Length: 116
Image (cartoon, rainbow, N blue to C red; front, side, top):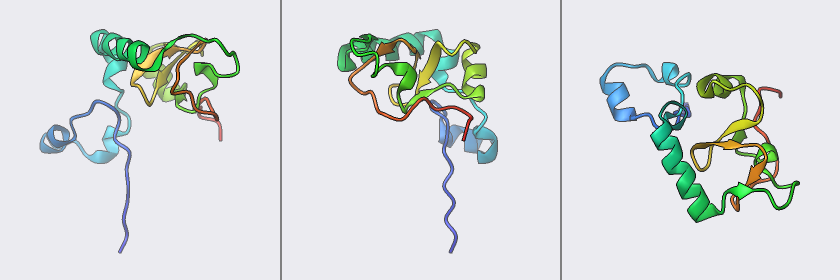
C-alpha cells in the first residue's frame, strides 16, 4: 500500500475545492487567504500581538526574519506581492509579518526559502 500526503495551503476550503472539481495538485499553487485579504491578515496579526507578543524584537537573534516558520519562498513573495525580504508569511500564525519583529512562537532554523 502506498500513502501519499499533500500539504494544502492555508485558508482553502478543501471540501469546497474538491466539490468544485479542483485537483489537489493544483491547490499547492494557491496563496494563503491572509496574503490576499487584508482584513484576515490584520485579524491574524492582532491575535499574534495579543496571544504571542508579536512586536519589535528584543533579541535580534530571535526575530521573524530568521524564524523557521517565516516563509519568504518565491511563491510566497508572489502571493504577498512583496519581494523585499523584509516581509514574510508566518506559517504558524497565518499573517504577513516584518522580518525585524519577533514573537514568543519563534523557532530556530529559518527562514523558509527556495534554497535547499
